[in-house]
Image (cartoon, rainbow, N blue to C red; front, side, top):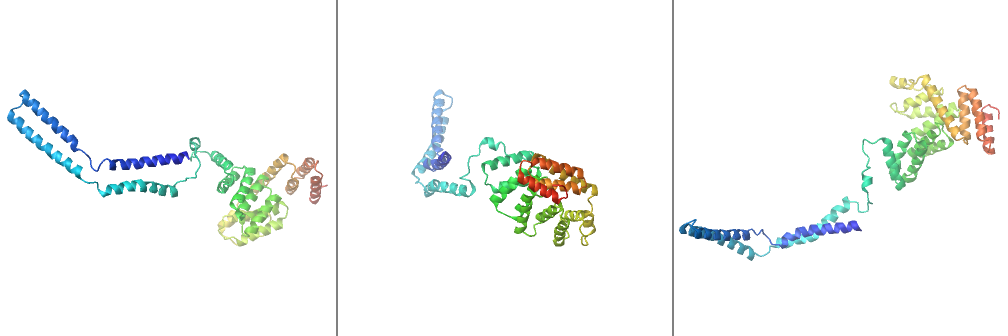
Amino acid sequence: MTLWFVFALMTAAAIFAVLLPLGLGGRYQAGGREAVVYSDQLQEVDRDAASGLIGKAEAEAARVEIGRRLLAVADQDAGATLKPSMPWRRAAAGLALVGLPLLAVGIYLPLGSPRLGDFPLAVRSRAPSAAQPLEALVNQVEQHLEKNPTDGRGWNVLAPVLLRLGRFDDAVRAFRNCITYNGDSAERRADLGEAIAAAAGGVITTEAKSEFERALALNADDVKSSYFLGLAAEQDGRQADAASIWRAMLDKAPADAPWRSLVQAALTRVGGPPAPALSDATVAAANGMPENDREAMIRGMVDRLATRLKQNGDDVEGWLRLVRAYMVMGDREKARTAQSDARQAVANDADRLRELNEGLKKLGLDG
């Protein structure tokens, strides 16, 4: 209300500034000042003649000339006084009185933001700049979303950045909010599944798998979901199923698909059949991952899973995946250690312990 009152005062001042000159007369009254000057000159001539500084003839000539000029000015002033007010003055006054406020409102409503809240100076001083680190910008977006939790566009921007920064749990929450406030889509479901898998140390959990399946239900050609479902099959020890999923992806993919080399490498890893004839560059990229690099990648995923399970030991499925991974890697001693740690972690939960023992039996270990 205060802001609108200030705007009204500013408008009134602008109108007054336009109307004031129109009310004072139509022309600049310079003649009055000229008449005063000429009168002073006449008095000066009289004083000079009286003191003998000039002769009588010169004084008389000066009086005649000054009198002539004074009469000319008087005639101009009389003409200006008798001149009636011109119609354009009234038109200009009406235009200023009515047109100026209408023009201001007409410009402000489409371009301004009458319902925008206050933006304090302290907040403006923290406006993002290109020189700020990514974490600082993320903090500002998070502060904005705390005050505006339904801003779907904000969650859409924040979620992938959190995933990139390794804040996986926060990324999961952000991707869920993306779906809540922006609507469901295959891409958003796939992103959520990826974030859940990342939070689980690279393991495709049941929850992550469910998100990938939802994504494929929305779009059967979603590449990310298909790839991760193949990875889930590989982690479960179903090499043939993983190869089948990845083979189907390659059969439908264009030759220049940017993800083709990644899927081809995964297919090679599980011993899938050779890929159809491709360009030399594509084949080189598919087979370019050294064996040591592949092993390092797998061990890194297993180590992250083991670390997560030390922090949260209630995940029976995670323990089974860890034991299976050690067995696939040929490290049965670590598999036995993981089995013992798993039983200790769920010892107080009869249902989880029974589920764990059944899973260990299927893996070929004593239950």
